[in-house]
Image 1 (tube, one colour):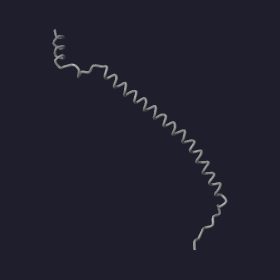
Image 2 (cartoon, one colour):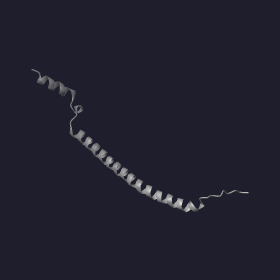
Image 3 (cartoon, rainbow, N blue to C red):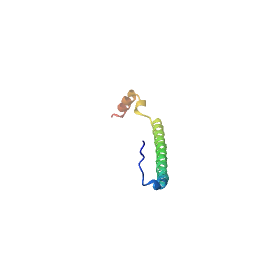
Length: 83
């Protein structure tokens, strides 16, 4: 025979359920704001990182580097400047 324990809180089940629903709605509303803010901040960080990367690549392409100058040119420059 199956035994089902008698619960004295049978009358409270609907109220506990409603309290859980209300708590879930309030917590969902609070965390929706937090998660939305985190997503927005993440997007801003991605845009700033992409802009810095593009600027870095652009500035490197504008400046002549030491690799562009041949070694003989450096020797010639040093000899010309000597007294």
